[in-house]
Image (cartoon, rainbow, N blue to C red):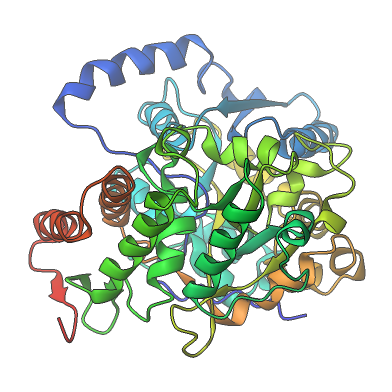
Length: 469
């Protein structure tokens, strides 16, 4: 199984969330939220006897909660007299980072260790929220077990490392074989082009009324899922990208950008996807995986490698023992089947230490514990992650733990990563605006033009018009 993680963007990549920036009018709300967070505990008052750990609670899934509860027991046994205080933030994709950043701003509320989506790490570094870890990493022998490319997930433009990765992921297309059978479609379906996707969705709409033929994430409500899991899976399948690495500039005016928007508009205007009210619900990503897919209400969905964690019998939000026989999975095709024929986007998370932590040394002890071989093997299996430690990726108990592991790991050689520079979260927000516009009736040309204008405004001279445009 190929498990190398090609995190070739300078600062690594992200995964399932993003933060929407707010302007002057949000300052009052931010102050109020900071007070609320302080009242709820924040990172204050623990000193050297308490290590506060903040992470995101994903919907109803208890995988990370159970995992960290076990880590807490290990940590407190290894460090008598020290308490590991787990502080989950249960929030939508757009809210987690806003709340986390509010916590990290002051010593009074800052946690000691935080779970950072790597696509946002540069903007958090630029804001002065995180500590570099290089001195600690240099003395940690196990750092050599991490894939060299995976180490880039927590590396910033200044060359320093600010986070230790705990896994990566890929994305593809999941489909319900029982719905396919009712529609006369094959159980070994392997679409080769976008037209193949649309053809299957149209067939399902005609033959199996009452289900959503094709779920593609779009709009501001679901945040980064719309940008990465929906739009960028399309854009990178056209051959175009968001960022020109050679020129180190953001791309505007690309035909691929308009083609991706047109695909979304086709799905939604023909009633092949969810209705806009569903798609724009901030909880839509949880609703699809925790309710509608297990209930047989969605035929095809562009999703991540990890989603079966929701169906695990012991910790899933919606235990579903039959998932591996009911569902199939296949690669997302490129637009016209052009090489390499398949497309994937990859992300990941890291553990980091805030600049305002009052107990960074013990926070580092926590990160080493949560990142050791035994715990990373358990995490990769339970959370359906693609490992970033070489000794975990080679372990037979990982490769045989989930029927979908081999397939989604096999997408690593063709996967792409977001340009995780500090400007990316704001560019991502403009992608969400554009996708929301086209699924609610705005014409593609206007939505694309507005995106280009906004990126020019954000990036200034660091913009290049796509070749051939």
